[in-house]
Image (cartoon, rainbow, N blue to C red; front, side, top):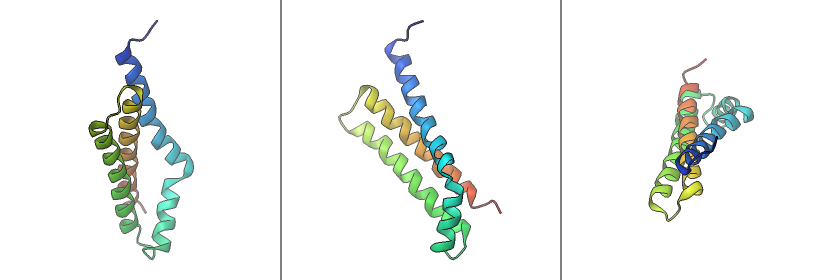
Length: 101
């Protein structure tokens, strides 16, 4: 079986999007949010998760907009969009982490 260019782009984008949350989970993003809450927000996990969520989401959105407006294309452009989508996913996970006790 051979892939055409669109299918190769889909595989690259999906792989990049999958890599960010997988690595964030391996690093332990939830424990980092708790640590951030303890150090900066004096134990307020809701505020820490909100700030972390906004940060990761902003990074992801900037990557996607950069890929759209910058002169990059092919595999690099698809990879940047996939990574941006992954960062947005991590941002959503960070938002959800604040509600858990």
